[in-house]
Amino acid sequence: MERGTIHNKGSFLSNISKNLQREMPQHVERPEWQYRPQDKTLTGLTQDELLEVLRQQCNFIHTDLVETTTDNINETLSQVIEKYGNGEVIAWNDKRFADFGIDLEAHDAFIWDEAKGAENLQVAERANVGITFSDATLAESGTVVLYADKGKGRSVSLLPATYIAIVPKSTIVPRFTQAAQQMNAMMEDQENFPTCINLITGPSNSADIEMKLVVGVHGPIKATYIVVDDK
Image (cartoon, rainbow, N blue to C red; front, side, top):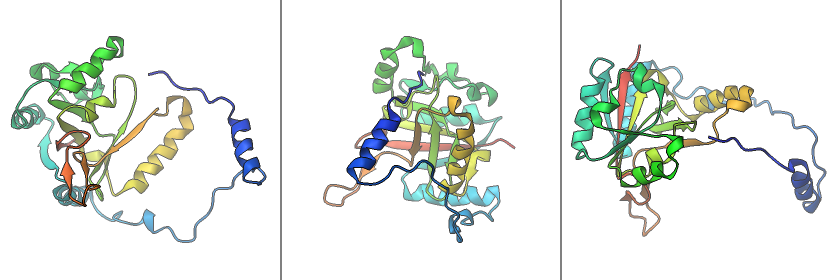
């Protein structure tokens, strides 16, 4: 994935400041807040308790949650894919599949390959199942956080009819506060910072029309989180 370069940043910000009739600050001090309740919410819970919070939230966001182990992950994955009607499968090119012993060849999965260009999108558009890993998993909202990188096309989680997120149990954190802290730490290595970060909370849905919830408007109509005990 090519990384972008920022051009004319100074003149752009200077022009905005001028039009707002403000002086452009040369340095902004990070504020020190006296109270930070966001740092404390759910932080006293164990990993098992966070998993229970995630499970309860998945009920609200129309998402199935399945627990498994590394020994049983392939059987569990097969069961979920079968539940979704089998069909074409597309997955990230992610070494964690091998690390967890997941055999994508057994599911005849198409692996995202940048060298194949538009073919990746074509497969994602017609695929029935898209599979990715979750990089951080927010218990409070039932959200999986995906960091874009080479071999990790966004379309894998957005275009197929159904979506499966492999969730290592160790990635479950209380809420977005912890994910943001992780991202801030990653900023120390800006060259390798993700070009895109996606936060996915179950299948796509919208309640914009007459305040009626409609699932599957602009993405997968069903989603399953497979939580793998990776202790």
